[in-house]
Amino acid sequence: MEQANTKFEMPVLAQVLLGFALSALVLVGIAGSIYKLVEPQGWVVQAFGHSIGFGAALLAALLGAAAVVWALPGYLPTQRARIADAVVYGFAAAGMLYLGQLLVIGNF
Image 1 (cartoon, rainbow, N blue to C red):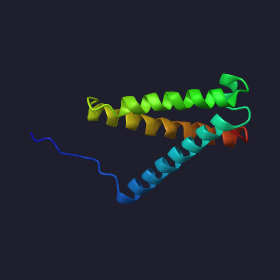
Image 2: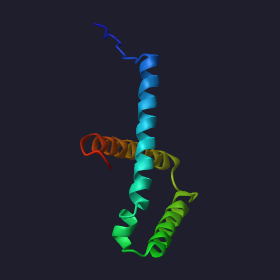
Image 3: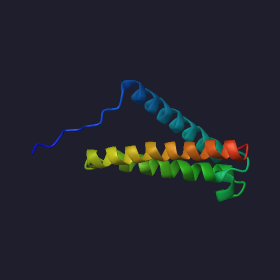
Image 4: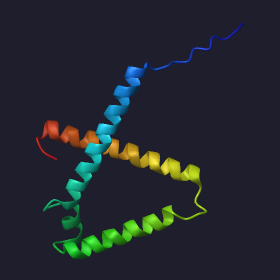
């Protein structure tokens, strides 16, 4: 008995719409995260009090350390791709959260 090779293929229009929706969610997630980071009562102020200079310097140091680790030549490309995918989908999830808050509460 032969098995039917039923492979589901999504129509091109559905792929385009899904890609657009994912891109929009990622952009909303990035913009919302930046807004939450730098707003007057945002994450930086909550984490470091009202010393924005110290908070910005510490954030820059953390980002610099992450960039150095990212650029290490021995780091596996497949691991790097998995991390990049996780970051993209994380921002898409954050975008969904921010849009949900906007619809329910009326602000971020």
